[in-house]
Length: 242
Image 1 (cartoon, one colour):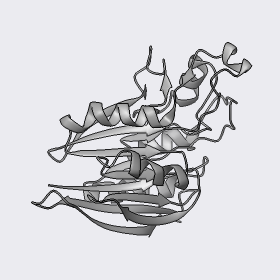
Image 2 (image 1 turned 90 degrees about the horizontal axis):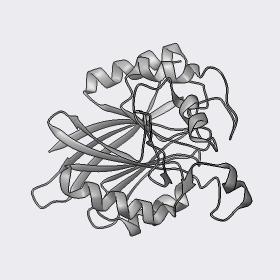
Image 3 (image 1 turned 135 degrees about the vertical axis):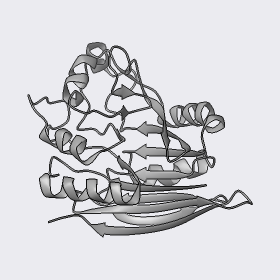
Image 4 (image 1 turned 45 degrees about the horizontal axis):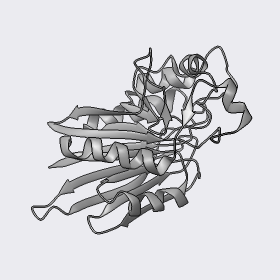
């Protein structure tokens, strides 16, 4: 049982053609899942632009899914759909409810088939509107406690997939907490902190990957599972194009 992943995060609209082509080439050569941990687009928090060219570049590279970051958020569901409408892959946030109504790309979690393996993916995004805040009255989206959302997604997905992966845009501290909360998770692909690091945590172990920002480097992860059920990982950071 094995899986190869290419991970990026916090692109901030800086994935240009050469880097998109380089990522697409790596994805094809390695037969990898290309995944992102959010804040890909150029619009700021709760702002909307008429076009997000980075999403077209991500389509070109062949991304399979991304997390919704704070940049992808909008306080009305239709606005959030508009911000991510160009993506031809799922945009995931398990801790937002009413997100999936009326659109294919905005989801809480999803299951993909890749190389004969079933891969479960769920996203976690920063809490942009606290429960009970007056601004919540203007929003048709609701944030639920991210830890409860993570447990719900893990319990729904774990029994039906070979690999369980979190696309997290909550930062390093919450990602470490997530390992303790959901030890059944195999891989956490993190963003929001703009750091570069790998860590193997917990008994299985769970791999935590942070791939920096702006698409300058990508994490390449080769995961396998031994007969005793333990995960094995080979992880490197690779320069992406120029």
